Every structure is written in C-alpha cells, then in structure tokens.
Image 1 (cartoon, one colour):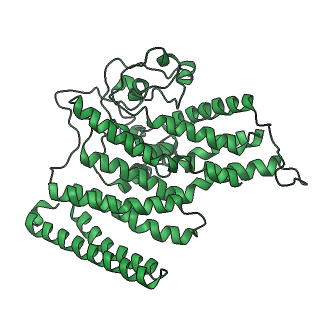
Image 2 (image 1 turned 90 degrees about the horizontal axis):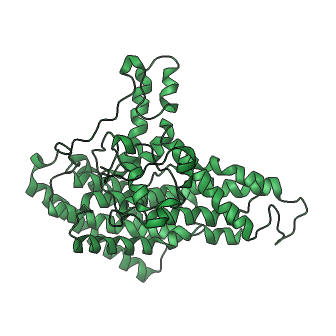
Image 3 (image 1 turned 90 degrees about the vertical axis):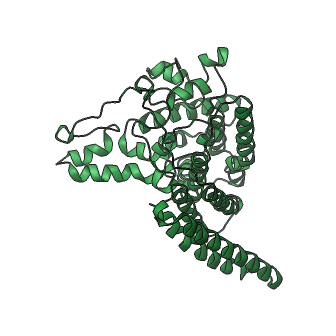
Length: 423
C-alpha cells in the first residue's frame, strides 16, 4: 500500500507543470495575436479545478481505495505475507493490457456521461467554458469520481494490479491536459490513432455535427471503432448547448442537477425517473419534448461575459491566490483527519464561490466574501494556536493585517461603485 500512496500523488506533482504550461500558452497566444484567454473565465476554470481537488480529498477513495479493497478481497490469499505478489502478474504485457483497458473503459464512461443526464450533471462543468485552452483542462467535475469509479471495478475483479491501474489512469488524465489547446493544429499521422488537440476540440464543440463525438481519452481508435468519430472540419464554437451564465464555480458544478430536480418535479409518473437517465435535453412530450440543437449563427453568437471592473478583477485574483496554498497544503498533507480537512476546505470553497460572484458584480458575492473573511481569520487563529508562541504571534499579526486590508478594499469598492453597480 505504500507504493500505491506514492502513485496517488502523480497529478498533484504535476500541478507546477500545469501552471507553467498555461503561462507558456498565454505568452504564445500573445505572440501569435490570438485571444484564447479571458481573465474571468480562466479564474473560473482554475477555481473549478481546485474545487474538484478539494472535494476529491473525500471522493478519491472511491476510485483508488475501493479498487484496492476489491482487488485484495478477491485475490489476496488468506495466508499472504508482506511483499507477496498476487493477482495477474505485473510484466510488460500486462502493463500494455492495463493501459489499453483504462483507455477503453474511460471511453465508455465518457460516452455515457454525455448520454445519461444524471452522469452528465457530474461532467457538464468541464464543458461549460466558452473558451478552449489549457486552463479549461483543469475545469473538471468535482463529483465525477462518484460516477466513474464503478466502470473500472471489473479490472480489480479480474486481478489487474492496483499500481498498474493507478499509474495508467493518471497517465491518461495527464495526457488529456495537453490536448486542450487551440494553438496546435493537426498532427499528421498521429491523427489516425491518437486523441489530438484537433480531435478534442471537436468534442468540446456545440456545432450540431460535433455534439457527442470523439469521447476518447488517449486513443481515438475507440471512436473510430464504435461510430462516434468526427474530424475537425472547421474550428468549433465551444461550451454547452445552453451556455452557462455564471463564473461561480460552485454553481457550475450543481446547476444541471438542480435543473433535473426541477424537471422531475414537473414530470408525471415514471417520467420523474426517466429525466435522470435519458439523454441531456430530453423532456416528456407534454413538457415540450427533446430540445433540438440549433445551428450556430456567427452574426448573433456571443460569449457570456460581465463588464470589466479592474479593481474587482484584482481583488478576485488576490482571493484566488490566497486560496491556492490551502489547496496545495491539502494535496500534500497525509493522515490529516477528514474533519480537519473539511474545516480547511470550507472557507476555500466559499472563497471560490465569492470570487465568481464578485467577477459578476453580484451582491451575494460581496456578502459571502464579507462573511468568509472573518471566518478564514478565525480558522487561522485556530491553526496558529497549535504553533510555537513566536510563530503564532507572527501568523496572527500577518493575517490580522490581511483581514483588515481585505475588508477595507471591499467596503471602499462597494462605496465607490455604489449599490447600483451590484445586482
């Protein structure tokens, strides 16, 4: 189990690479004079990624922990000794088999997540950005693991090593980060068998011919085998068929399930259940029937945005930057009780929601942030009480100053902009 723990951190170890790659893409886009990033959208992307990892502290046991427990329950001999191997032998052949199986299983989960409404609710957040860049790769569904983990359990039953499964599944995830870019065109012969930026741009497109195509993780061969492949003929319009009109990363994770709850309440009989398991956009005929996917009109197409207020954007950036250390601490901390992790995560999650609200100039964002600031300071007091006296005094003093500055900044902003500019 010690080796397994190391492999669980592969994605966390790659976080610096993600941020460096995003910085490189931003510079490259400026040099190429292509606008592929917007501040508010990218903060929302990164906030969703942090939210996924904060929630993932409590859900990742489903993907890896249940796999390991099931593998041990089925294959571990009753008289096993430490270091004894069991299950299917680990060798070059089984590494290749597991690599292919992980990608194959991912294809079917991903395909179903686009065709079963309740699963789409866990995945839709990833598609909700109307941009397409490396930061969008981090815009993940916080609750997706709740639906994806059962798909991989047959591999544990068969006897494939948990270490092989963990390594291959995370390599699969890491690869997919780098195909979220508009700056890389088609890649020659690789287009025949690999999932490339061109293929994955199609997957994120809302043009009718691009909907529900190219579900592959690493190998596009599955889409070609099972009839879901579509080449990129022209660059897509990105996002969801019904655009998301918020920069609040918490609501981005939950809004589709709220829609299903409302739709279920309006439905009759068995339709109350069907709305959860039919495809996204399905409604009973008496509620209008399945929604048609409209063609994109370039003349009327607009991306969701909110008027830029530089001071609020700057404040949102500061709050986001202050949340990042909490995320990194939780990524690297081992053995911290779940209750303490939840106490750390809660102000961070609230801060991410408030950041989205402030970027949209919402009153609720201002109110939530005014509540979060003293809550965060009290949390710091609690943590500081565990430190040496000199460190405690320094920590409390620094955060007291930060708290006063944040409150002063927000109140000054509110007075200057006036209530009429917050809605």
